Length: 254
Image (cartoon, rainbow, N blue to C red):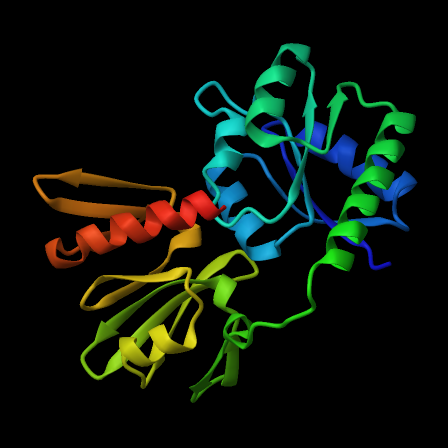
């Protein structure tokens, strides 16, 4: 079996280092840590970009953010969750909202951690065995010709949004966690047809990846969507109803 991909969310970097060290020392054959985050924005970006199989989540990650609610806001959630916390009272809420794969009380014991990882491996193996092996060509990405960098492959899950500018479309995407942009001689309609259903037209000149939307606001029929890196995009009045319906359905499917 392949190594499972793990992501750690905790507001204390020392706690992340401890857990990552334990996973590396005692579970290296079964698991690799592909990313970590100490806040909501980095968590949403990291999970969307790295696509982990399991997330180790501290539920009390800051005075203003509830880790359980944070995970619930991530659309298209295709990973298991292991709760890591020093507070046992979070167990009921975590079970009711997340159906976690396990629950680790800090300080985490080696024996408990090994059992949790073994259980996660079994769940993933069973899940992959029962799922049909069908690749989605739209999810592979698109190739963009660039005069300086040659042919650049942009994976669809790395792409935040596309915006048309005259005869060009500007693609805004993540590369190694950093925001990048590149121009392509394509219409938004062509891009919409090439990308998966997670992309929604919110304006005549804007196509957004709903996986990255953290919230949206409406005031007097004027709406804005918020993405990581302090990105705010306008939603046109004509597109608002369609966007609300599609985004609600997208989040519901998880």
